[in-house]
Length: 47
Image 1: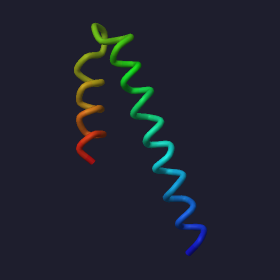
Image 2: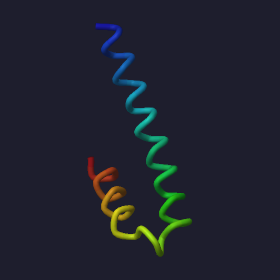
Image 3: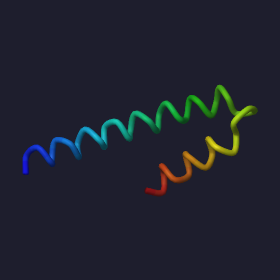
Image 4: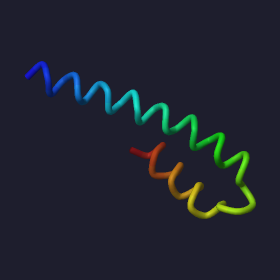
């Protein structure tokens, strides 16, 4: 059980880090990949 809990916690941490990097990616590459980035962020914030 402990191993499963640790895996879940690490996944949440990675997921949160991905949100921040995705936001920066949208700011830096807004013109070239707007659609993909916005969809990705939308799914991230909803889940």
